[in-house]
View 1 (spheres, rainbow, N blue to C red):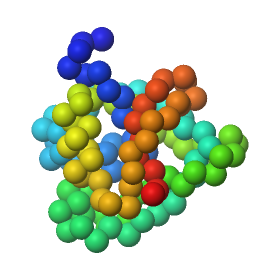
View 2 (tube, rainbow, N blue to C red; view 1 turned 180 degrees about the horizontal axis):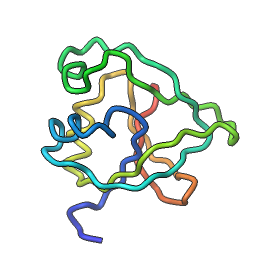
View 3 (spheres, rainbow, N blue to C red; view 1 turned 180 degrees about the vertical axis):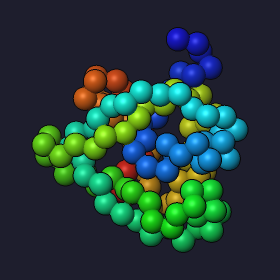
View 4 (cartoon, rainbow, N blue to C red; view 1 turned 90 degrees about the vertical axis):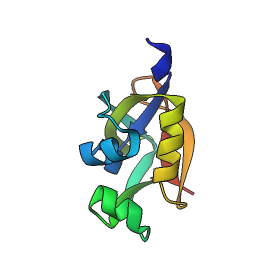
Length: 115
């Protein structure tokens, strides 16, 4: 793998949108489908007008830890640079925190979950 895309980012929400990727990273990300167990999807009302403008939606999905392996969330694992991780941090509102997880495939990735 090339050194400029050394990070993995699991997205289950608006970071999968091409418009959000282009406005956040300046490019369309490439990735593959994967699953994260032990979490469930909830919804979060977004009050940041810039984020709403980028995503086109004021309700975003957010992950809640359940620690139940039967709870599974489908998403996409993107290859990103460390600079793009910082850009993703700036895009996500304060209700999210970025943590490291192991996906069902065994891939280690960053993911944004509820604080």
